[in-house]
Length: 336
Ligand code: AMP
Ligand code: TRP
Image (cartoon, rainbow, N blue to C red):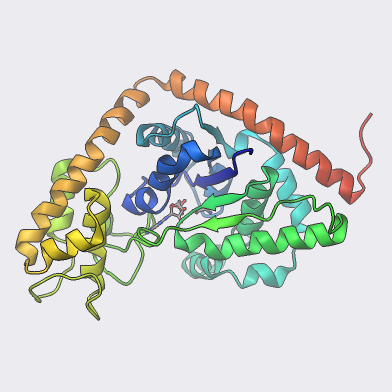
């Protein structure tokens, strides 16, 4: 039986943090041999909020190098840059024309980001989920591993595909594959270190709120030491009204590889002063090999560029095929 196809992406905005790693990339790596994988760098998405042209290209390479440093293996995985394949933007336009405006106005992430942008909200920010649908549908992906925050965008993708298939294909031979979200329970929503009720995010103005994958041991120690806690002694996963406690234990669980029962038992009697150095240690040691591989990859840009070139060639073949089928179904005149 053919392997199922998996696709996902990360925007090259700011540095990647533990939320990106534990909610997304690490899961891609762990399961990659079971699937045919496509992981890309969503640079077209990165310009939906004001961006700095001077750093976009460097950030794109940095995310590609982090993908490789985290363990994505080219034997199972194709890595490419979204803007290198023009079919993404083109399919997004075609899908725009069948997507009702009110489907987009409902998107939680749009509403949140639009609030921050004030009067400068671009059409691109509203249209972001349609571009995301195009990313996924172009590759006829079966599964899309992401964090919890992307669930609504995946539901929208399914709605758009269903509508397209209904209007322009037939029930017996649907043209676009409906993707399933793959959201792991643990790590799906890593929370901020300074507020256990809001998610760890690249856009939080406080550096202390997140641990970046490239933070030094001293930075990691400092951030964990200063992370928000409470005066209660004894740590447990589901203590009511202790979101920070749940989050820090989850980080410890995921970074140490221990079971939740083992962590619950180990930490049941601990105070924060004892727990925080332990957590810092597993985070530092867990990130160390990634940081070392990242440094050597970034020292040789041409190797990363070569990976992206090969990825583009492989991905483009599938993307172009789907785009042609969609254009045929919509009735466009074929060029000679
Ligand atoms: P982004 O940084 O928005 O491009 O997100 C890249 C991937 O990381 C997506 O799959 C997100 O769902 C995931 N992600 C981002 N922040 C978090 C978080 N705090 N917890 C878990 N997953 C996250
Ligand atoms: N919107 C996603 C995020 O911010 C990134 C993304 C773009 C994506 N296109 C995608 C994720 C397609 C999965 C599939 O996290």
